[in-house]
Image 1 (cartoon, rainbow, N blue to C red):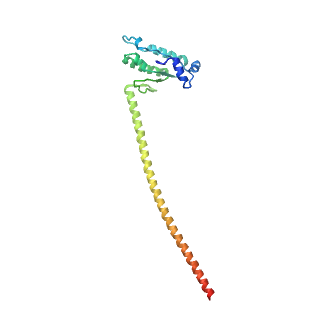
Image 2: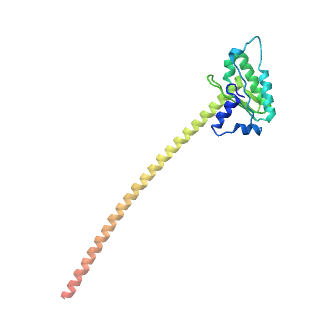
Image 3: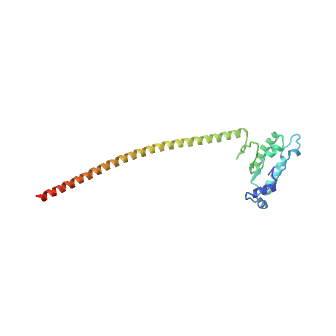
Length: 208
């Protein structure tokens, strides 16, 4: 349900993104309903509700068996109707009604701050229940951050410990390599001395 762009405008815009809304409409995969709201053509008197919108939306949902509904953009209602108290009450009723219809709702807006809709199995969360849900999510996020920080600190400690152990092993290996080189030099010198001694003894025997 669109409150700003009409069906043809939406079809052209989506066609540029590669979506064939005409084909989807023909196969009853999507239904586009444009609701025109012009502030200058509306006169608000007394109490009123959005029951007409409910009826129109319900007919669109039932006609194609829709599972998802997009309302674009909800800001048009706020700009077209001045009694925001009634609007907010009716929007809460709309959310509950959509929940009862078993459809997923995507609601867009510009210029006003729209909070995430919390639809739970037990119903729409508002007021205190919503605040509790948001507090639970913030607490869960903080727990995840703390756990991530703890694991990161543990990893850094283990990394430094292993790096220290590796450095110690490398130092020990270097020391053993140096010791082995010295031993090999001593062995080579000893072999040279023994070879020279053999040559000397051989020369003495010839002289005799």
